[in-house]
Figure (tube, rainbow, N blue to C red):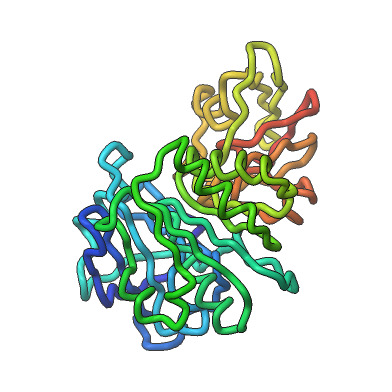
Length: 322
Ligand code: FES
């Protein structure tokens, strides 16, 4: 994690939301309000060295006494979510990063917003629902889950004033899922905020396209970057490490990080998925092709920073300040 943004929080509450999902509530160790955030923001947590995970904040941003997250135990993952479930206990502390937001509500949109959640993807959308309701705005939250028993944050929804704007959809698979999505999307609206597993988001995107939604009205949350699959020879470039003058070739099937490591040079990484910010590096020369989800659009456009775990270069030469 990026050290300057890290701080310690106390684990105030741990709760089983479903058989696979636990919620964790954090508070500041000094009793002060936590750093502010906007709906859609996430924090990073390192449950053990070398692993960093991002979790969306579920609570209303107006409540700075706590950060609430939901963690689904992924049995086939790299152990990050399991460690969260087994090692974080009420009363303990954990280091987190300040909230960062790649999935904010667009300001001044007006009109009806559709919030579409697949499983644990509901977390940022719950924060959005609280903000939109407080602002008196029009929205619907559609929560897709395999079964009724897999609904997380049920109490938060049921106790809210907007619980009647939540529709639940259980056990839907194509073609029924597609039919239901078409029905929802055909009703129209201003924008769709979408979060869930990639296959679910792909189906929603196709349905949105088929029902006439413009691509820029669909706003997505990803938790790992989509890196292009290149054919051999395509996208190869020369990498120069400015501090040593070493030049290396980055072939189509290797990331910049892999090539640097293979040359015996150490570089600090964590997620290697373009989301945590650990590998951030200054660009001295070269046209960066960004694939990360960490840099802001302005930072990406500025071209002076790169996340070498996922991003590449479109010019022949890339010079990094390493
Ligand atoms: Fe996390 Fe590169 S290692 S963004």
